[in-house]
Length: 350
Image (tube, rainbow, N blue to C red; front, top):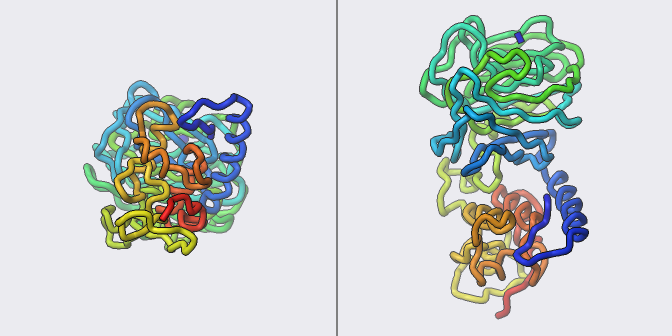
């Protein structure tokens, strides 16, 4: 049983390193409390799985893990059940000690008695899609035996799976409802081995078949209400349903506090607070601008027009886009401080 700052203009390497350190500190401070790793699997290509928690716990897909656009929120990964997995190098932030929450949206291709890993840290802690009774299970080396639910997950349908441990009780949730719990004590043991998603690097087995999306690892026990909130949102704040209507749509664009210091430089009714960060210059700041910013920073696409470049900077007037701007825009999409209106300067003229 188991960020580097890159603007639209070349900058000296020393300056890049300095800004990277500053940016990472800002991003880390902005992460939700206790979130130590989060994967949306929305990358369009390549073998990297970006850690959206901004703690730099990036993962690597092996050759048999396949990307799909048919995720719960955006993209997802398809696992073949015979070797596909994501491996995340061990890091201090992943060595949980007294509490945890593990979460993922999963869509099994088939379900049968056995073991199928969702999130595994060399058995120090784990969340299983399938166990010997075919139902989900959870546990760790702090527990003498794993514990499981009683009902297998449906095949070819999305289910949200979560487990929490607070030092006194181990709980299992399916689609936000607690389906199992038991008293449990003990510290979570550390490990020097990778965190894996969808399989096991140690035993080379217990592989999951199906799709996995929106994986989160926390170093604290979330409440049932917090788990329900995570169920309804992507791990990327830029894709959150800020309108609260259950749909990611134009209603979610730029729901920011007005900034009286800013003028309205054109006929866009929301004002310039909603255009600061508008990297694609379509007249509003929304999730597509995060993608344009990322492309521009990575140098993989033009990312922004000349007008978009002028609007792209959120943190300073006239500056080029950098990772701080991406972070502020993403948090603004989630209606979290500081938000664009508070951070964006009055950089547009009357």
